[in-house]
Length: 123
Image 1 (tube, one colour):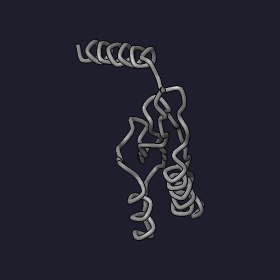
Image 2: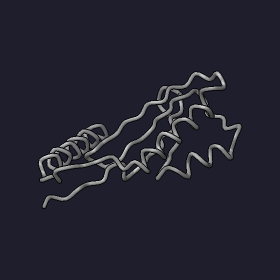
Image 3: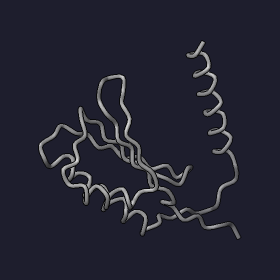
């Protein structure tokens, strides 16, 4: 029964996403260069913190103009933070972060950035 409910929820979310895509949009969206600078700074620091130590880590990044946001995802066997001040700098640039276990036994850290685009209204 639970799987059926998840399918219904996913269908509902997909239908809302399609509805939003069809809504009128402003003519132009441009990058918010301040926020994009924050994203690039966070990416560089995150790579230094987690990947330069020789750990097997994968960092992916996705941007959604529709949701005006972007996020990093890092999957690792374990996440050890040896430089808490650097980690704090990364998180302070973000709007949200989460760490949660995956069914594969790995951990996923998700770091979200909002307001990556500036929307210019129609005249």
